[in-house]
Image 1 (tube, rainbow, N blue to C red):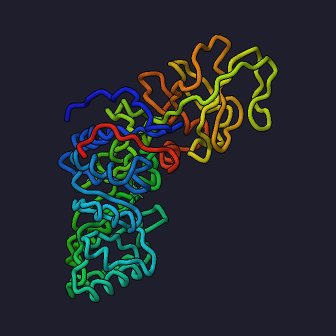
Image 2 (image 1 turned 180 degrees about the horizontal axis):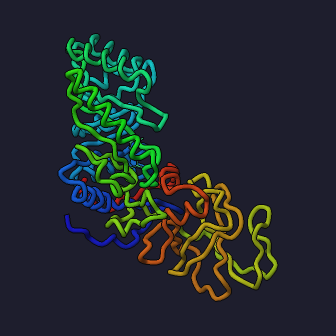
Image 3 (image 1 turned 180 degrees about the vertical axis):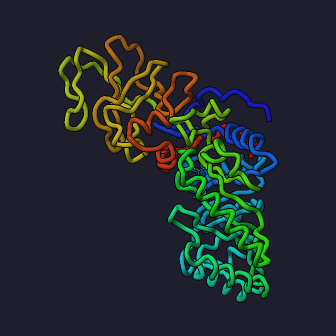
Length: 390
Ligand SMILES: *Cc1c(COP(=O)(O)O)cnc(C)c1O
């Protein structure tokens, strides 16, 4: 796929004061870029958490258009939503509680992650009840200390072998997840790869084919070819953000951020020097100036921790949020010569090559990670989809 330039800022949906633009072609481009990078390994695009805030179904379709051959979500309900939208690509989900509707999952050919004997029992019970063979993927905890089999690994493998022999399940894949992939030199990276290799060898010795082997999240996809195996499993990179911001930015990997966040000034007004601004007067004007009120706040996902630090651009000029981020609004000191007015577009997330702030800039301002910035953009912000085929 040839990269096309990002479209220029769209007009907001009717009456919207703040909105999120999603460049679906950027998602397709990013997935195609990752696929080229890892081939012959394939790409399983992670679209959990509403496609990292970009929209579950549009992101899933855009990822498939870019050449992803698999999709992954965290929660079973997300996987069912993908199927109900008519998407029939191979699909993995690994989070489901006791009592989850596994019969529906099995009926939809959703691959279920198996991380314990209890998980395997839930799935085999549902498979027996429905008379269908469930597709499962063995999730091995190689050191993250979160989901997946740990000390119980041999026991789970024995039970899995029995369930396969019975025809209750078929093993389509074996996977694990890194703790420190964003620090490629960290000793745990190699240790986890070794444990993964041991787990695969153990399966083979028991006569069980591990299916597709996958270990690499975005960071390992971009920095660690020895972890690519049969499939890579990136989330963040599909949306054009860097999982290793201290090492390289999106453009260094050929990735384009897919999310922009904009608002329109609702009020532009003169203020004297010495005017305290927003709750607690954390900011005070140091000269006669013009203030702009931006109708987006922490209820929309603008982190309050970025008060007095978060970046935004107005008419191409870069500013910092003046004082505290409120629930529905932030204030910007536009300077004494500002010639615009209410209705002018403010960009909170946009294109770095145009001098607009990025998710990483906001992450730095709020002392968090870009993942949290994009996944938290709230439902009150209408999504404007740009590009894509559907
Ligand atoms: C979220 C997640 C991913 C994707 O991680 P990124 O860092 O966004 O690439 C992959 N695998 C598992 C198990 C995950 O939970």
